[in-house]
Image 1 (tube, rainbow, N blue to C red):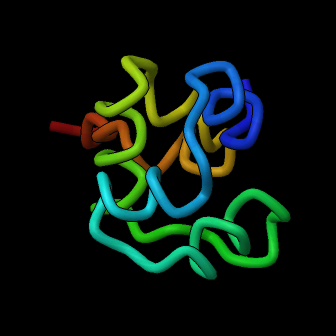
Image 2: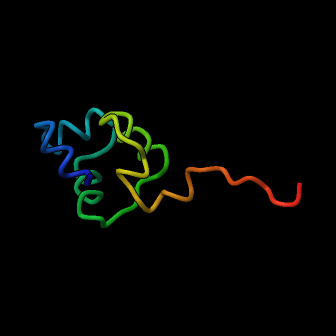
Length: 73
């Protein structure tokens, strides 16, 4: 589910969400418009806040949040 959809579903304004996460309103707006990619720290904060996985909220992190098992060990 998209960040904006979750925010609206939870009846939060951009400002309220930004305050909960500790970022600016402009930053949340840019994330919703996919103009920025969040840091992993912010991605995890948002995912935890909404009770979803980082991968669900930000599909671009699907591979980067899982540790790969080294081959040839």
